[in-house]
Amino acid sequence: MSDAQIVHVIDDDDALRDSVRLFLVNEGLNVRTYASATEFLAAIDDAPVGCVVTDIRMPGMSGMELLAHLSARSLALPVIVVTGHADVPLAVRAMKQGAVDLLEKPFRADDLIGAIRNALDSGKESQTNGANTQKAQARLATLSARETEVLDRLIRGQPNKIIAYEMGISPRTVEVHRANVMKKTQAASLSDLVRMFLNVERS
Image (cartoon, rainbow, N blue to C red; front, side):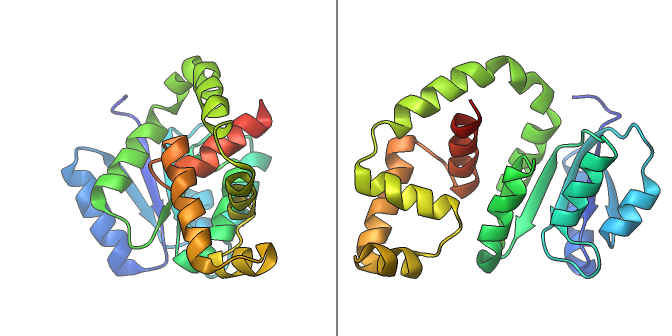
């Protein structure tokens, strides 16, 4: 990865923003921080390099609105969205609109650095997208009808209790189906599962 690549961190929480910056600098990354999406858009040029880590919910311009602005300006920056548990449906929508990954708070440092390095290397991944999609299709094909329905509802952002109510099963049964989905698809996280599903959907 190029030394010119910059990790742009956007969060209105001063303490979190500073701690993330310190951690990433210690990992040898070039970092710039912004208190808002508006501040970020005002600061970058028309040919930025690197990736963006942004909270999905912020005062003023949200992470969703930021994605729209980046698209409108044709700025091809990989975006990682950070979300609270209650914001997962919103984060799934963000991935459908182009975000490359999502992290649920509280996230582990290793998960953050892994997501960033994947985003910075995302250009290289295009060569293997076809093979990855075929693997994903094969894994999704192993799901039972019930597991597929649970997966569809998860991707739509429905919480376990709503899934259970609408399917006429217990929340515990939903959890079992969800665990089976993660195991059969070999998804390492919710973001991995969403990305796998969307890649197959777009193929």
